[in-house]
Image 1 (tube, rainbow, N blue to C red):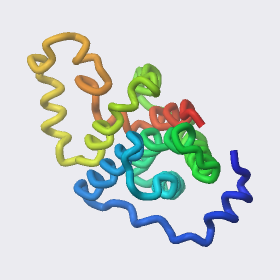
Image 2 (image 1 turned 90 degrees about the horizontal axis):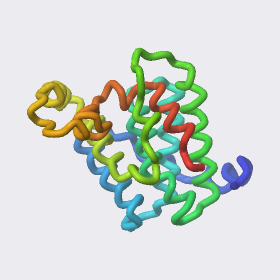
Image 3 (image 1 turned 45 degrees about the vertical axis):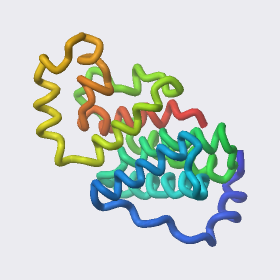
Image 4 (image 1 turned 180 degrees about the horizontal axis):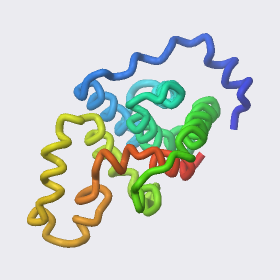
Amino acid sequence: MASAETFEDRHDDGPPPAPAPTTPAEWDDLIREWDDIRHGYYLGDAAAMVRACAENLEASVAAGGPDTALWTLGLMLTGPYVVYARPDAAAEARVSAAMGAVERALGQTSCAHEEHPCDEILLDAESDHFRWVLEMLAHPERDAAHEADLADEGLWPDDEGAQSWYEGRMTRDVWACPQNLAGLARSFPG
């Protein structure tokens, strides 16, 4: 793993990260790029894209920003790329620092949830689903219809779908919960 000095020396004089998305369509574009990184299809500088996500996450955490859940899940989706697939010490250091900031800032927050996705999810086996969670979080306008669909038991022909964190229990409230984000950051494979 790179030291903080190595990271600072290599990347402080680079361009600032692109501005954060402000619309659901912009988030959709970014989520597609993150998914391309995860699959190894991204044609740009994947390590720079992951570092930018980490930088935006750190800024969002520090400001108590509303997009912290999106940035955290973005790193959950892309971060393993720079840790395992294409190791990049500077990007890995930045991702680890950002995930540490999430855990420190949100880990002591209380909530009313009895359980969270981070308690049950096997990251390696289920990271494919993070894209759908990200898209749900990026589209707050869908919440009312989504909540109504969750309440309609007829949509879930079996108990497994109704109990899945990615189907019947996929709500903004539980995925964006500070305890869930801290748990995901704590379990990050960095």
